[in-house]
Amino acid sequence: MSKLPTSLKADPPLRLSPVSYLVMGLLGLRGPSTPYQLKRAAGRSVNYFWPFPHSQLYGEPERLTAAGLLEEEREEGGRHRKVYSLTQAGRAALDGWLVSPPGEVFEMRDMAVLQLFFSEFMTRDGLVTLAQDQVRLYRERIAVLEAIAIHYSARQGRRRMAPLDLGLRMARTCLDFWQEVADDPPEA
Amino acid sequence: MSKLPTSLKADPPLRLSPVSYLVMGLLGLRGPSTPYQLKRAAGRSVNYFWPFPHSQLYGEPERLTAAGLLEEEREEGGRHRKVYSLTQAGRAALDGWLVSPPGEVFEMRDMAVLQLFFSEFMTRDGLVTLAQDQVRLYRERIAVLEAIAIHYSARQGRRRMAPLDLGLRMARTCLDFWQEVADDPPEA
DNA sequence: TTTGACATAGTCCGATTCATACCGTACGAT
DNA sequence: ATCGTACGGTATGAATCGGACTATGTCAAA
Image (cartoon, rainbow over all chains, first blue to last red; front, side):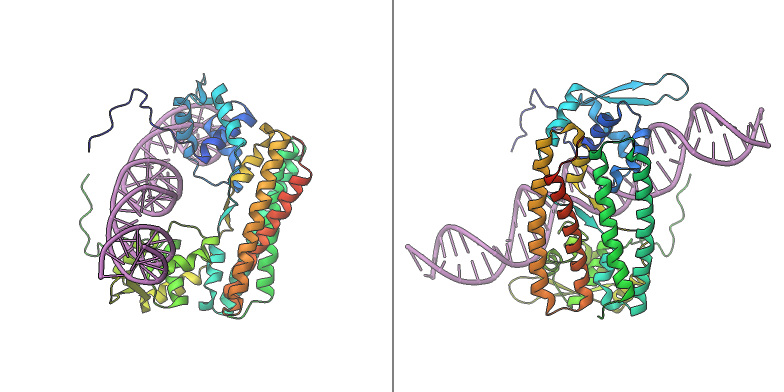
């Protein structure tokens, strides 16, 4: 079988991943930003419901720029930082994505629940320790989210705060759950 | 720079991933199983709090067997299926993992929440559509989880049911949230 | 008793992502 | 001047993804 003839419009397909839209979205909300700024911003917001390694915030904007969805500008002065901003095409891509709701619910990874599922091989004490640990961690998480909420609630619109609200409710649901496990660990 | 001298104990490090423990755990709960059986079992249970591609259930047991943590037996008859079971060493590894609680809370990926975060660029109607979509999906998810719960509650211990309980609570939390968004979409 | 449809069971592999170690560069304090 | 440290970014091998593809058994109808 022969290869397909090299097409004239042989651009590599350029698949846009969730992180692509995330980058464009952040740039839309914040205006022109450097990768590092995006990284900081993501850490206080989107990372809670879409985690990813920070190094993607360096590679991805380059790809998007090559595709004409972003513009890149180099800063003057000492640091030669790259500042990215949305182009018209980028804004259009973002808008297009936003009107196609995902047909899926959240996807969760939770080591503690995995261990709980296998807890038949644990002692009662082991299980209680696990649960207490989680209780502590969720309290911390809740404190962090509440701090973020207080800090930003004045400045930001209700829509941007909504995910934080959900994050808090989820964390509280987990806190309650693990609290119950700790207080009254189920028999095997 | 020269290479390090080839060590006498040059075993490749063999990193055990969460999926490794998941496999061992399932084998512990179910007894000897084929990859396909694990796949089916996972689909009704652990996949809800630890998703992964099914193909790992073929490769991973092989690695674990090579490491002495599993035993492999070939079925007679037409299908030459491989049946895996835990060895003593495997059981020990599993137990060891279970007494080291993860220092982390869940990690969640949720496209819908990502879009919600950027919903300033959506119309009010777009947001409502998104929310209604999610409401429908969470109702479905809840129905599935309840069916699983009813089907297995008789047969299985309370510990193994606990994750399902949490899954239901999480789903209901999300359902409530999106219901509220649909009923009273926040202004930008 | 073929044959063909369907469910079961398993393999493969290129592309993507991960994770993290590492490298510079500015800036403030001493 | 220099040192420490936070900032800003790069590089890379390993792990994972995901889904297309192959193969194998089963049962029913012709």
